[in-house]
Image (cartoon, rainbow, N blue to C red; front, top):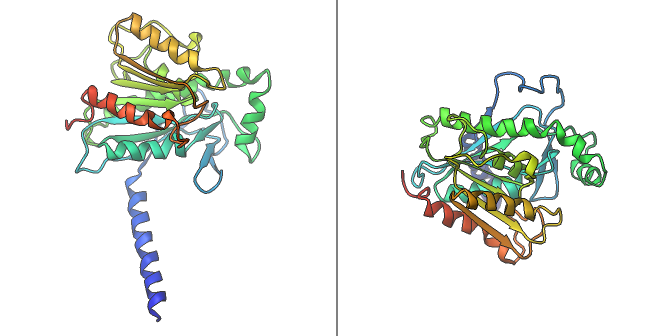
Length: 297
């Protein structure tokens, strides 16, 4: 065998080993035993649409799951974050609002649970375009009305699951937060209202959330700290939703931090655009550190 061929074989073997280790680390958990409550008749199957080489869209989720991204034991600090990608309740932006967030938090010692919550059914093989087309129609709000409470229920169930299994994942049960983007921000922000002891988040980070007044409630007496980030030029007009949440927490004298960037539009996530929104995740890390959640438990 030529040396170059041998090196190629070794390199491929090495990559396969590394890949298998990464896959082994990412445990997938079914959020419910059997069919998810409220959608027992849903029969469509989860699929992935590859949008280029560095992006992917998950769609047709009828059986919600959590994918575990554990922090390296050498840096793990006992904090956990449930991450909820966005996508109009029809898709999940799995990379720039999902796995890239998980990888960043892992480096800070945070264990991440990536939530695939229930979505409305996509009937084409191009879910991103289908969502874009649907959002231009006047009945889009009606189409997602039945799905939104089920997605929110999945967020609450995710918090409850992580807390109940905190010992298994070497997590402090009083250091479990949830963050979400756009529709995922709805899931995250809703968890800050009407919770129980089992599913109360210890901190909440809605990023450019869809959170109209009808989905909000009274700020609880033991409301969790809130971190918000949004672009003032959000092209879906959602900046006011973050400002409303900030004002509610401020008036209730509860811990809250808001970053309203001048530019960034909607859906910036972990995308690099060489503008200040690129650093929102750093500000989130600063906030977690301020609250003590990045310190070793």
